[in-house]
View 1 (cartoon, helix red, strand yellow):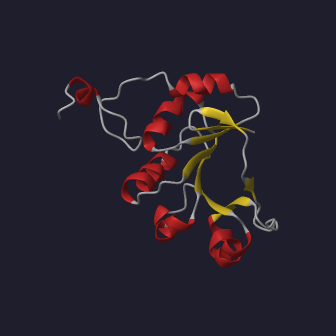
View 2 (cartoon, rainbow, N blue to C red):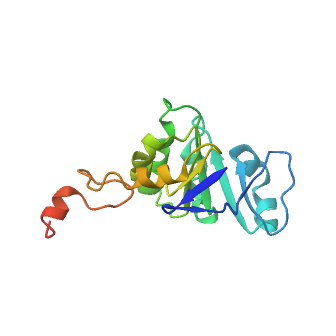
Length: 164
């Protein structure tokens, strides 16, 4: 899998663990919400960084009180027509103030890249057959936005009238 983080292709330094797999001491792991609930203290004592993977059926409120202990939240897109992760991303960034890595995983499509970034995603896990160059282009195709969003880009009105 390829990873685009902060608008560039990078090596993924995180390990996505299955629920039963052991965590290597000092590693950076992404675990399911269920595993995190069950082994939160054990993970914190043994790994360097912890990330939690949420599905559309999970609630952001389940991790809201612990966001300061998480370095990454991975939100799953099971299908292109399932937009729950967009809402979850906005909640994490805007309501809960999450500043760690917000990663889109699953059915992550190039034509949705710009909207994902506007909602607060800063990392995208891409399939093996996906063009990284195409993704990087997609992230910069829209240069002006009309409304404020989680990415905190200036709006068209702010660019026209900086004193607003």
